[in-house]
Length: 288
Length: 288
Image 1 (cartoon, rainbow over the protein chains, first blue to last red):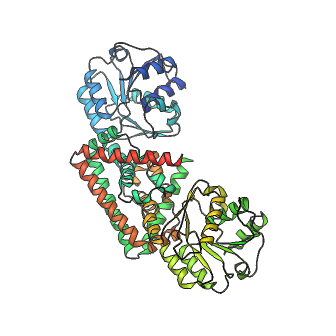
Image 2: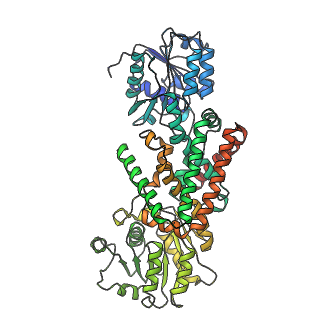
Image 3: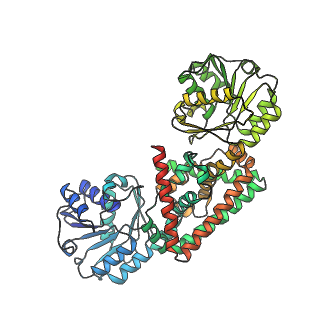
């Protein structure tokens, strides 16, 4: 790794993503210091004792005042509150980034509250795990996954490059740049929709009757139904326009397929199946 | 294993399920002979050479005439055709069972075509694999999974018991008895619905735009979208009343959740999430 590493990094929110960030940075980058903030002092102590973070602070503003890079790994609204509250604490020229699942409101919020000498670049790792919290964090969850960042034409090119280099170094396979608006449209389909369908399956009136008779396809579709309730209420609320549009599209698609089945239109059904088979096979080639 | 094994078994259709049946019977039961029928002679030769089946026949009726147990592992309509065609070939007192994904039509069909001295008990393993064909068959795919059988009050109790003992011996965790009608209602929800939703996700207009940005939840929900087109057209066609009812229920559930999101009704959304989290956690305990 050939990037200049003479900087201090603070990670805000040492949960699954923040903890995994801290661990993978510790493992792959020789930075000056890694610090973290979290409401849970015990988590900070544990991370300190195991050498993942370098120091503990009584005053949260000290690491922020001395950090060249701040990675906000909290829920979306907490990201905005943190930037607002620490407006005057960020180091001159600091790079501030986040990992939350919505981007338009966050990027707009950063523009509104941050000082002009600070640089905000939104980010979102396409990685995760069923379980939440620092104790499940693991540097390897990023290996081979993708990361979306949402810089714009005004973003500092050097800092965009630095962020990308850090992300590649800690294991991400591809860094994709797009607008915050495009990000929010895409995740409504690729992530929020599967989560909602998983929850709908589990809440179905048919569930009680079907108990214990779930094969692989049911287990797969409902894997993410054990959902972080607070986070997801917030994510869906903040991206409601896109997600409602996706849900409406799915309703139309279900109606169409239901009509094919009801009308014995096997030919149309086979077109749907052939297309999904072909596209799903391609996804596996991608991964390989 | 303490069951009387002085019988010959023929497996009809040596694909993923039939091949896995043959392999797990070979491994776990000392029967007199295991035979198989398949349209693909090469598959039969391969199974014979590797010792999975005991003999090859020029005349398909010979193993049928000499089998105490016949396991039909073909598509549903082929199960019915086979029974019709071999009505006079089955051995006196033979137990005939199948593994296909619909039961009401099959059980009714067996009643209509089989001789009264033959016993039919419908079956359906809750096991599977993404890939199809004998070359992916594997006795271990049944380990720890459930199996539904659909005997009724007229079924020969000893033969029901024998079938259950065989199924336990080859690795199934639980054998659940239910009516063919209840089976078809349940699989519409537990299996056919997840498959349809997987295909709908892949056929979405949003897919093209989202390329390469699929995290774990999308990969999980679409795992079964690489679907056996012929088999699934048949399964959905034969169970259309139940599946159309499930699709209509899902549309209502999506409309409800969409309304909650659109109306900022976070409290109701949290109730949905809490319920799905609780039920999904319980499913994992079950499995453990």
